[in-house]
Amino acid sequence: MNYDVIIIGAGPAGLSAGLYASRSTLNTLIIEKAVVGGQITTTTEIENYPGASEVTGPELVEKMKEQCLSFGAKIVSDEVISVEKKDDGMFYVKGSREEYIGKTCIIASGSTPKELGIKGEREFRGMGVSYCATCDAGFFTGFEVCVVGGGDTALKEAIYLTKFAKKVTIIHRRDQFRGGKSWEKKARANDKVHFLLSHEPVEILGENGMVTGIKVKNKKTGEIYDYNTDGVFMFVGHNPNSTLVKNLVEVDEKGYIVTDNSLETSVKGLFVAGDVRQKNLRQVVTAASDGAICATGAEEYIDELK
Image 1: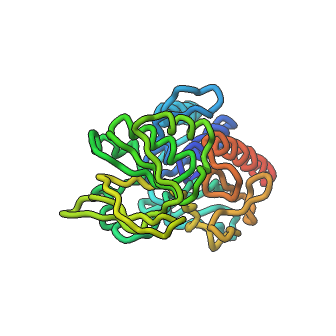
Image 2: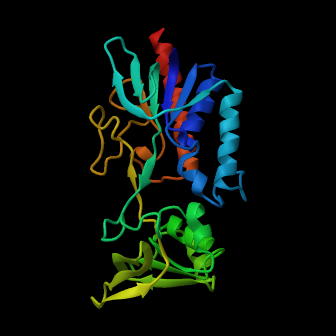
Image 3: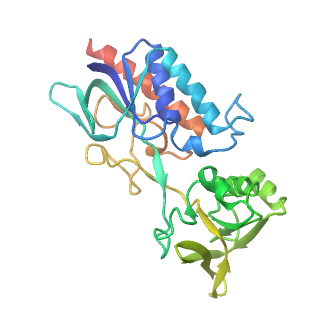
């Protein structure tokens, strides 16, 4: 079956694109290899999405999904292996299950959490090392944990972890946080939250397959010492999931896809939305905006083909 619009990724960007495209009566397909909603499904509280205060990530995603489906968009579970625009002008999206053909394609594949790359990180992943507080916080009820990072995500997730852990230590390599002042204020006001600023992790320590501590370096004094903890949560940024098209379109030095103002790539009919594209702010609201812009651009492109 041929589609007007094929969207790769069902996070806020992909769902927004699906809503706008299907609402414009375009035959729309959304392909998601994992969980509909992407990273937002691991967010416990959203305070900065206009008109949706006091809502969790999964709740917001469910509403977005329902809107898409109500206008006729189709969502399938498949892992996309390749994207190619052939001489007939159509996009051939090859999945692990089947191939999909569309007049336009929107890449909304998002990004994945970065690893620090320190000793013990991969060895103890899932055994005390985590990248998702919402997923794993319950396992640390009554224990002590560390959060590595200095942005909004690190601060928010540290506060969330205090609902379970008896002590949460935020480790940040700088002496000031990069996150919003409101989240820093909340973290500092929480008696369970402690701080190791101007420190960087050196190694994850463990015994019998479980984390027992983290080796840290004081960046001001150079001292390296062991800090006892039962778990380490990493929030140090993300890598764009642009591998599918990095040889097809322009990407920057970090791998983010470069677009024009209409979010179209150098390949006509191929658009990019959300965290996978080059931009200054990566939030749910900007992802949703990207999706709307891409879908509108796709509709205009299709109209020009007629």
